[in-house]
Amino acid sequence: MYTSVKVFVPQGSLGAGMFPEEVDHALALGPHAIAVDAGSTDSGAAYLAKGMSKNDRGSVKKDLELLMGMQHTAGIPILIGTSGQAGGDLNVDWTRDIVLEIAEERGYTPKIALLYSEQSPRLVKQKLADGKIAALPPLGDLDEETIDTCLHIVALMGPEPYFAALDAGADIVIGGRSSDPAVIAAYPLWKGAPAGPSWHAGKIAECGAQATTAATGQRGVLIEIHEDGFDVEPVDPRFRATTDSIPVHLLYENKNPWKLTEPGGELDVQDCEYVQVTEAKVRVTGSKWTPQPYTMKLEGASGNLFQTIMIVGITDPDVLAEPQAFHDKMLFVLTERAKSATGLDEDEFHISLRMYGWNGVSGMPPAPGSVPLEIGLMAVITANTQALASEVAKACNPYFFHMPLRSGMELPSYGWAFSPGDIDRGAVYQFVLNHVVSVEHPLELVRIETLETPSAGRLVSSAQAQ
Amino acid sequence: MPKLSEVTRHVRSKAAGPFWVSVDVMFDGQENFDRYSASPALSAESIAAVYGVDAATVSLYPIPALKVLKVSYPRKSPQGGVEERDMHSGQQYTYLLDTEL
Image (cartoon, rainbow over all chains, first blue to last red; front, side):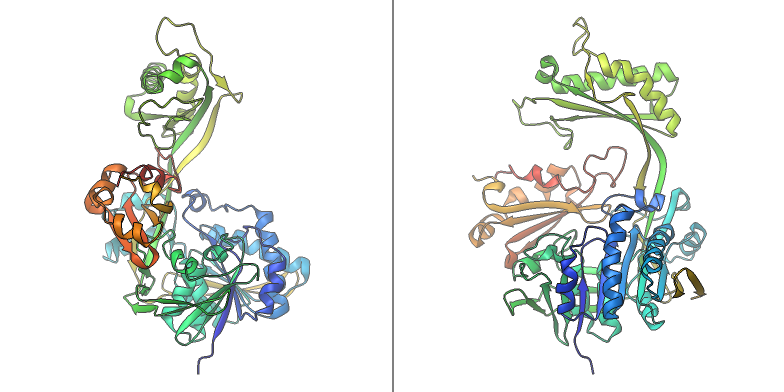
């Protein structure tokens, strides 16, 4: 018979900076597992493309020290999803090394499971040829050329690989790219909890205590999954979950407020009821889960364009009086200069000018009569190689520095903040896949590896072919 | 005619994955929700015009229980592209605040 399961979700993003007192608050509530998301696509494709973390190593280590201390004390597992921001193999291994370092320093001997969901371009092409890949709007059908532009490709895991890790007795599961709610729902589901409440609780808790009056992903929540619903409350008694704060969170970073498509099914929360059961705790009932054919979302990051940027500050009253005319003239002058200096055709480079203080964010015309106090002018120069982007920027530099609003005016000199003024920014990383792949079973595209740490510094590795 | 910012307690926007943006328009009170959430100024066509996208791709989700109108539309160019100005789409809501209802 199913009895309720409690999961502590310490924060919205591993490395966000956990407050040490939350460990005691959480332990007092008797959680059966700890689950935390460590990534997102929100901050762009660079982290998948480069296999690097967004949060710095020291911050991630500090949070992991607190969580591994809890794991050691309470003997409950830690499940980490989308490790190292993007959940590619490199991001997983980066997180693994921090966990092993802490284990060695503290003399812990956890059993560690690694869940890898990175996919080779060859396999993705095979799936495409087999008709197993479908596009999600707004993108169209996939082609081989797009697959070839990807530096890394990951498939979004559901809870099943976490079940396999728990079956293998893992104390710490370091997961690659995973659905955020799946990581949090995995332990209750593994224990036989009902699917609707488990997935819904996973979605509500994915950002830690953001869905409570704490209103920050740095704080933690406890979810408890019952037979017919779930409870959610912040672990710190100073904060509260309310019948306003909890349902509103389902809107967050989500296209449809009532339905979430997840690996293996769809969550429907349209008919849910939210009841305040204690001052700080909300009970949610009515969450429905409908199983569907199992698909995994593919994410791929390209990085085949490169940028150099230049920034000047402008307080020249002539320019401030006619920003749009200045912008248009500058764009024309820089484009002509780049062509004549480098011999490139106009389609071999791209110049974008952003006037911060005027319309740098929107790119749209401001209200009539608007006058900026200052303009931060950024030139973003894009080309097929870093060398070319840099060459175009250097050719443009004197004009960017000195171009007057109208010819015949005294030569102005705009305000640089740096020397040299042109900054090679690196690659333009973009997500180029928005497709799903059908799989025979949830572990088909997942590789699971377990690490024993029988004593500090000595590892036994065993790879399990799936 | 009030502006959207005068009848809402909060409006926010955020990326919903790399290809979509979602705006949550949180009305101030039931009366404002009932009166303005279906305003022609907040129709798919009007939203599409503000963001320069095809009206057929704009989804509107009125949520009476929360007094929220959720608006989702595809990005004009994918996140992180050559012309990117708002990586997380966190500033996109501001272009609706002065909408006359």
